[in-house]
Image 1 (cartoon, rainbow, N blue to C red):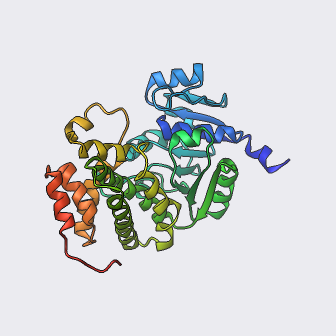
Image 2 (cartoon, rainbow, N blue to C red):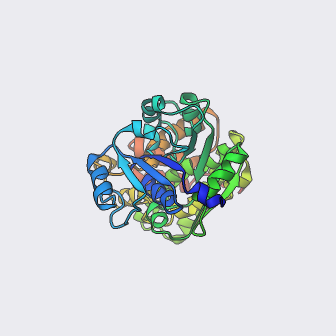
Image 3 (cartoon, rainbow, N blue to C red):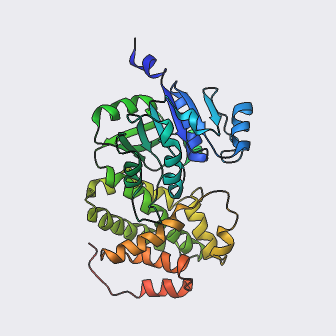
Length: 337
């Protein structure tokens, strides 16, 4: 039997019915797998099953008949791969809930980007704490859900210490328009995806304040320096930070209003309050939650991250945007490294 024929019989579970989870479900179904997609919202599930569209989070994108939605986590049983695509702050609670339905050997593909606000732990640490016997893969990179779901060209990093599992996952999701690149640097792959959301908020603020393209280019570049410093403090490889899940994701998230985090920053820069912007949000801007815990960790570990501190000051300390920008611009001149 050809390899693709065997892969086509796989059962894939996706936990998270937002835009990214739906895009991953569509991607896997397009490759021939049968996909069960879990969502909390009954309206989302009903619309997907009856009309093959996630109107709430991915409106206008038709979904494969191979995607079936559910509100019951028990339906995650007997899947070979489980993609975790809920917002980072909900990963722990959802995994605790679904754990009883999963076998110890089920392969977990972590697609959530962020740092747990309550503990300061990376998502890989949270997942390993709850399901220590399950092989873990990190999927991260410069991807907007809508473009992936529509089949537009994208590339990602998949990182794991299990080479055979990584190879099998390549067969499940790899397509000409969705190119996974393999890495063993799990920590580096995860950190890039977590930090870029904070920097996107900073870029959005400069855009909203109409500070120009030079400022945005400088901010992205200096954000990369902070990302590298933070990653290396956790043992991440510098080359990972310079790849798809670091620099690539940073450029994308800081350059397009498809980014929820950039859009949040733009609105702040234009004068809206963070209280108004965070009230009754339909989607999650991960950088808001990551910024506070990231600022604390960087202080505790003595990692120089002035952009992160500036974002935290604006979002969580109530400091004036113009004053924070002025403080950043008036920092002492230092070496670029």
